[in-house]
Length: 291
Image 1 (cartoon, rainbow, N blue to C red):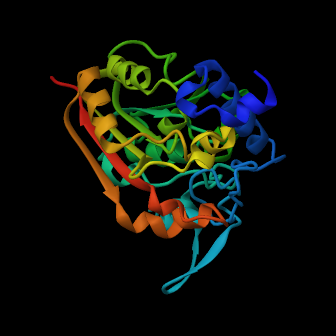
Image 2: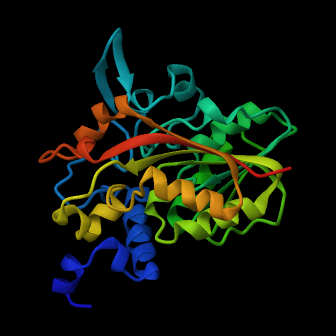
């Protein structure tokens, strides 16, 4: 593929492995602090956290009602969540807070798809307690290395991180109680496989609790065809209807996808030149594996 081809090929037309490699390279850059998530698609990292902003949310602050709030607080975490995790785990890459609706209980096993530096895993570890277990899976070696370093910083003996793709999980069948994820499924070129494998690893009655972006209107050509837009958590987003079909096809029931209109406030800040909130919004995605 020539450089010209790369800029005129839509996400849907790209080879899945090529997409995965683009995403892997971008998150390697973030993990090693040598770059930002959104590249040259016209999106400037705001430093306020949020999906793929590429800035450490521990250091990012923005004015909010009642005082300063971290970027992670803006997407749904509270101050106690942010304060409870040691510096270096919260990279400000989320678009929501899976902990808020996953209803995790003591003793459960939690799997985080695209776990990054481990922020959501460490929050989940507090929820499930010492008798529970949390496994994070990420396809970027540098992210897995960073997350493993953070285990000791957070004294999280019940957390482990594995290198792997979320469409081919390095997890045994029917051993997980809840699958969480935060603004990662949109990056996967083969989303049906992601949901199929999530279904496989869940125990009967297990559940999915995912925060992600969903497409609410057709993307402009300059976004749809730009390879950087998929690594920036934009062009890879599916519609609510598409996600419902994929989840049901995988076998899930009780599928509920709830777009968060208020998320446009921070999504609009992902791009200095256009209002991404016109065709993108954060949502909670829930489903259950039948008993």
